[in-house]
Length: 441
Image (cartoon, rainbow, N blue to C red; front, top):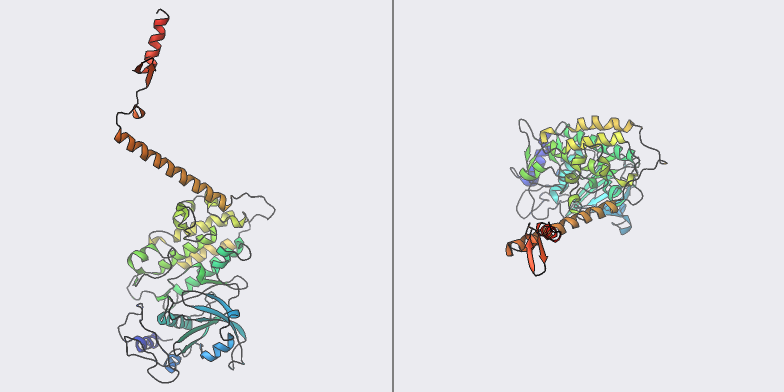
């Protein structure tokens, strides 16, 4: 879709000069026919359902009515409920040509905007706009939307295996095997590379395990484009915007300055790649202090072949390519560089990762490899911290006692000895002198 069409669309929604990254107060409304359908407490600009349809012309998106979506989700039945996120609840549904002529029969996921939730109308529009323009095997496919009265809904292809987060951390069935983890990493990397190399580059800004969906054949698909931003244009090196995203995944320079670049996404990819290696969340407050932040704890081990096993997920039972794990860890290390310029482009990441799929040095299941259980490692870490705290407290107590009683024998480096009623310094000397006298020396 031409750039001026999108600009006119945004202008009609918010007016000229408005910051599309700011929060829109009030609850916007779409009308199904009359102009002036979008209203807000602070703007008189508006658009109608027809305006939206015209703007999205050529995108092949369907504008569903709320009645149609109620029908396909059994009136948003509890039995059709899939889950919920920052955007709102998600329901499973089924569409076919009986609902509307020409519709392909398929399962869908219907995401409904929670008007009191973390995201709002702007995030909804961002999803419609970006996924309306972009098509790629590693991006979730947007089929249509609903903008009727206060309702904001998105209709996606249904991705049956759910999110990477569920498979890595909740492990409802079993641990993901090594080859599957690599395939997911490569697919997600290809999705990001596509966004960064698009005719009008896109910065995803919220790359994390919960936003990576997995298809039946473990094809990774990026979802949730509510925080996506257009990349820098012309001579600009970055986009300055409000800091948004998820703690633990956001690049440090973006958190500090608000300067957003494609390299911010590369850092986030490095975090997810590390999660795939370790089977751990990037931030876990339930772990010992040194391991609460996965990146800080694991970084020193990523380039050390002998210590990398400390990072690897025990759930893999040692069934992974040693060479592949070392190379994947090295890629993660580069992506997690504190210096954005030192991070590789996503296209380079794909080129480095993809050959690892062909390595055949994964041991067979019969080989015995002992990996210390996570619980054992955590107990050792906690015990170590406990000892350190006790030693610190003991040293503090000695120091306070020494300051209060500087002449105390406890702190004297000179040994004392009691001989009858007399107390001698350097008792070893006194003792030897007395022994010599008794011998008549």
